Image 1 (spheres, rainbow, N blue to C red):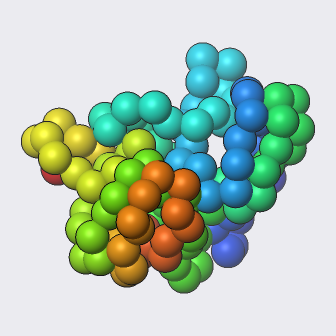
Image 2 (image 1 turned 90 degrees about the vertical axis):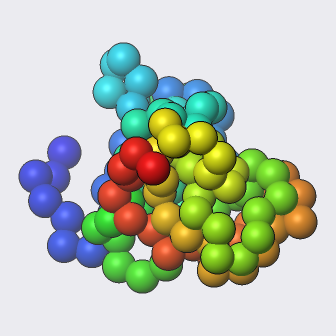
Image 3 (image 1 turned 180 degrees about the vertical axis):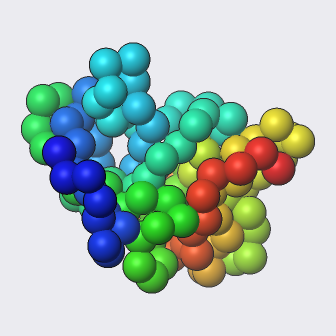
Length: 121
């Protein structure tokens, strides 16, 4: 694996099914999998879909150049802080990964997000 990435994206092995725009974290084996909880330690956004064992390109949060498209986990208002599970943040323990630049009316809508390194709300 490359030791550095000048444009903020890297490739990883998918630890399960991944869709374009999924928020990702590492599993115990060092593969990337979709986040499931608002307080997961998110590392990036999938730039393409993959099945388990495939290589998937990942936009590293806070390092990828420009904004990213995420697959919303539910309805989100424009301007809302986004949690690690791709929903609007609610709890003080949520890991924030960015701010919505447009609204999502339902889960699975693709929306533009200004991303940041994940941090607790």
